[in-house]
Amino acid sequence: SQQGEEDPQALSIQEGENATMNCSYKTSINNLQWYRQNSGRGLVHLILIRSNEREKHSGRLRVTLDTSKKSSSLLITASRAADTASYFCATGGAGNKLTFGGGTRVLVKP
Amino acid sequence: DVKVTQSSRYLVKRTGEKVFLECVQDMDHENMFWYRQDPGLGLRLIYFSYDVKMKEKGDIPEGYSVSREKKERFSLILESASTNQTSMYLCASRKTGGVSYEQYFGPGTRLTVT
Image (cartoon, rainbow over all chains, first blue to last red; front, side, top):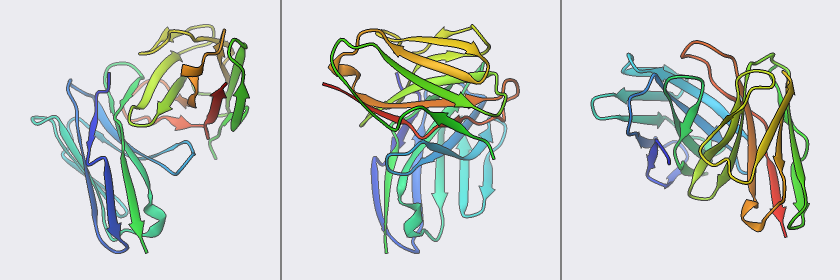
């Protein structure tokens, strides 16, 4: 079963706008990761936040983690057409496995 | 630059055929994973391996087997392909230990079973 559930399932925005997507999970975690997948391709790692961190930035990406609510959000600022992709959250627990959510499809219109 | 390669981007097989999907990584990673991806279901773990000749079942191992004879190579085997195994298959690898290591993915193999 999926650990993470992304919300919304799909998002359509204009270039230059911000895109926010959320991820909820069920069990305790060591870290939470976000990945991007361009159409028909493999996943690319974007950012990792540890369970003892609350916020992390990487370029135009901002990730928050609230372990009390078992939720995370990914914010992409000043979106570009090249940000059009599916975004997945993945939770890491004990061991080396990740559990992925169903993903959010983001369309950035030029 | 780190690299995970998969033997085919697209594959069409007939029901009942034995299918081999190959994955090779050049990062000397201990851990390797096979996922399948279906619309609306995200990625589901089929099998993973944390060392040569070691394997563990993931969430959906039924109908699949794996082989890891060398550290860099992890093979997924469909003993008798069925139409419900039509899917995108993704291989990944990861360095062992620590909580800050991400998974590196191959480009995927889109398998169609007719």
